[in-house]
Image (tube, rainbow, N blue to C red):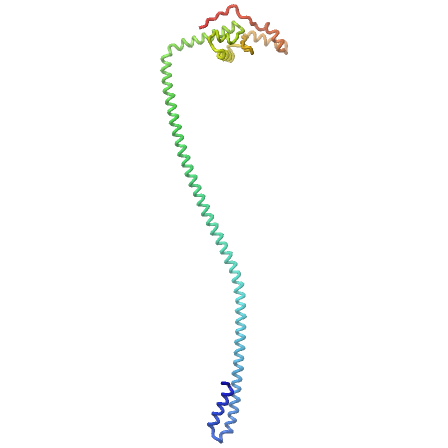
Length: 272
């Protein structure tokens, strides 16, 4: 129902209840009343409009503030998200580094355990080798001592004949030297046959005698040994000093005068 219909209903009801002589006055009052009602209704409408406008303004301001707050919150949220993301990344890196340290520590521990096992194994092996070497050394020393006792016993048995045998060897050596010196020039094979020796043994004995100074001479390329006495060597040295520089041909030409190659008249040597 509209406002005009309501007003007409009120006016009709008022007229029905009035007396005839009261109608003019009542109509005036009705006019005033209607005007007042219109004014009130208009005021109410204006007030409602003002309220709506005020509400709209408040809503606009509220929306503006909310948008502003949202923008500020968005900016703050972006910074916070970046900060949180960086913090999370650092945490991930820290955890990864910690895991890497733990894994490296475990690897090093395993390697150390392997090294310890290897060192212990090598130590045990070294002890075994040392024990084996010790036993072998003791066994060798025992055998050597037993052989020493046997040799000592043998020496005790043969001690009486040793001195006589040694004298015989010395006599044989002197006979060997005397035979060479008397014959001056000897074929090595003949010398070996004379003393019942091998040619190689004769050569070794001559070299030993030359080394210790008991015999002087040369072995030529034809298998002969030429004995040269100390006096003859000094004569050759004097000849070289006097001439200054001597060729081999000149030395060979004068060797017969410097070195006597003729055997002694008596060269009988007793050979056992």
